Length: 364
Image 1 (spheres, rainbow, N blue to C red):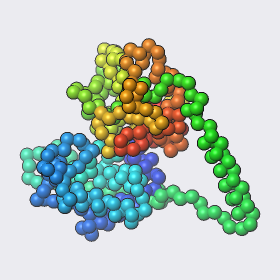
Image 2: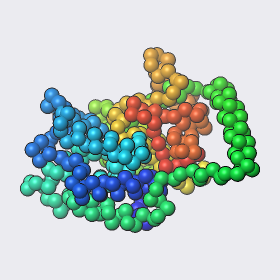
Image 3: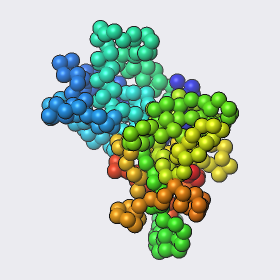
Image 4: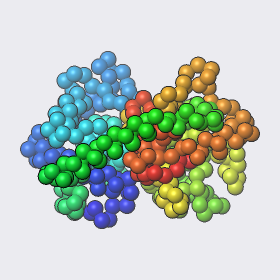
């Protein structure tokens, strides 16, 4: 049920109001047999491209123009028009409704694997906790019934009141807003910034593939993280007071990869997982790249040149000796919408803006 949901990021997304209408529409379409599902005659369509070459990236799907992945994308595009939602307001609810996760492998791939697991195979459905698509939809229906009324529609601004006095007040408010916006636009924090460039940090998109508790430290997790290198990075993070290992394993994350390797109570740690935290550090959450982001790609910031020699990250020794990250850290924050920023500019991937569930917090 909604009250029993422990995933804070998922709960925050549901409370924004887009999940319920999207999930309700999916349930209706499934029951009406309108929801595209994997073709029993072509179950590998999501895993190979039009030339029948294997797709290795988790966030990419394949298929031809007439295959299940193409039908799924076309269907969701129409769903976006029907419901008047797009971007993460559509795709995050879709992913959570169909897979039960906020991030991970492309949805068409997961549905295809689900379809294959339903066949007579050597896989023990009980051991892998297999849940059929029919059961998933039934569980989704039960979950939707538990969502409080106030979270069943997207938040909308209150309608403006009519009347002469109200109109005058409204005009005055608009004028003040315009003036404030002009003043804010005129004062760019980058204009007065004299610290090191954000390009000195080598922040990469990674996926946590393994998590375990550090045997000698109550607050540390040990992780293996794929950031597109030959071998996964081993990194220690002080996140045990804030989240479970299950919350971390399989997640897409941002990794500061040009830190000098060091031993943390005997564990060789090489990098740092970026998290957002509130002011008193009582709440800490992983910063999330978009689900379509590519493993190993470098995170960029608008108005900074990440190309050529000028955009090369600092060497690990230089980063530590000159305390570059410590100088940049005060300017790495989250906006009131939870977007990680540097000097008012978002942290970006090729798939879009990174996000976090914590607004007006710090990133480190």
